[in-house]
Image (cartoon, rainbow, N blue to C red; front, top):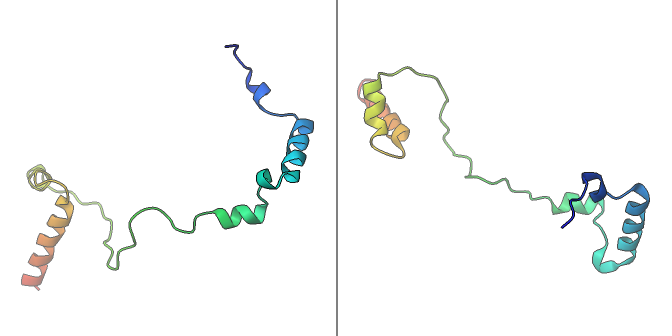
Length: 93
């Protein structure tokens, strides 16, 4: 198979105009208008829903022993650490 030059893959302005004219005349192949592209954009963003109660992101320095212990408990270790600290705060309020 012959190697194509990158510039051979991009149509010239004249070729692009001819392609667009042919596409516009064919109802099944007509290109979207800018307004149609706007309507086609997804309105939902991927990812999990925003939490009702959010947590504050901070930087904290902990001993390696404490971090290793919680990390060894698997996924969700930060949530478990938060729960334990919350319980301590309630008991000592």
